[in-house]
Length: 116
Image (cartoon, helix red, strand yellow):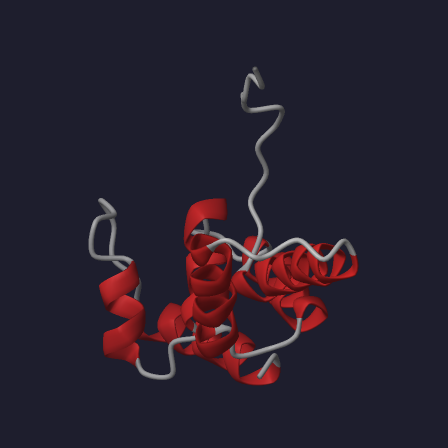
């Protein structure tokens, strides 16, 4: 019997997830093991949603974390969604207890545009 458990936890962007899942799929093809439905669907989702490379996404997260009102969860969410308008960015911040000024929103959108 195989016991499964969580060994560790770390945040990654969708672009990084796509890279990891693609590696898993390639190793299973080499072993002639059929991919599970969930793995195929996860790869499809990550492929369609990821809008940049893993290096660009990681660079964006690092740049966003240098901003004053940026939390890691929000930085990764922004890197995954890649908002292009103030309204999309405000939707990401909707659950926070603070609001961003127009200048802060523009600064964040400029960072996103740099990393596209």
